[in-house]
Length: 357
Image (cartoon, rainbow, N blue to C red; front, side):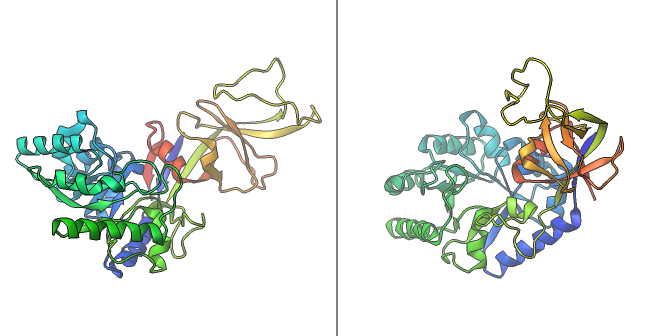
């Protein structure tokens, strides 16, 4: 078997650290829960922290959150699909938007449901994912202001997710200027300027964000404590809120080189004989009860630094334990640190048990 474990105390301490960072700077923030893939056990842990605003990119997950606590403000964090409009208005208090046509659909549905649906207008600022182009923003905003049952809660941007463009101080100043431009043009106040995700935390810690940027959406930093500028763990935070444990189901001394006619494996990879100098070399290999259906090997790292990951097939992961100082046996668990993308795969797998300590 294999399971992923959430360490509650470490999650609580990461949350307390972030909450202090934001509250001390008069910044509002919400937790991005999409990593949890709608798992109710873990969603309850997030709610228990005292979180009152949760962001997700799957409306089915927002539905679960509303069922657990109707008072939580739910935010749908990508442009809505036409076929999801009814449920987005029903289960998302706020949605991120970039298309006039879509917002008109939200307006019509909000009228039908007798609700006011709030929106954040996302602005393109160089990462080339979602966002209204800057030169079109004023006309776009003016059109949306006329729509019934739609309340514009603010503007925002997304950086670093597609092209790797970082949220520098200059980028956030530019976002602040868009706020000023809109407020001057329409004689209104924009309550929220959502300046991005976990990648912006180093700027916040340095007090380098413009004061007008008063909202952030945090997921990766909460669960992994990662400084996305440096790749290091933020001082005072934990990088191991989650851990993966997989059981050994075979241990055998085997050759390092396969024998027979070679082709592609199930993942489309081929074994290369180019670097093989001695066909007689062997290693002590262990097979773990987890595979590509559940994870990608490049996103996990054994707690035992002397273990090497060999490769994986759909249901099994092969590791080399030759150099390990531990005397592994059948049935033993091997622990792994997990990167963000690794956790996404694991938490999306129904075959991986989800536990809490």
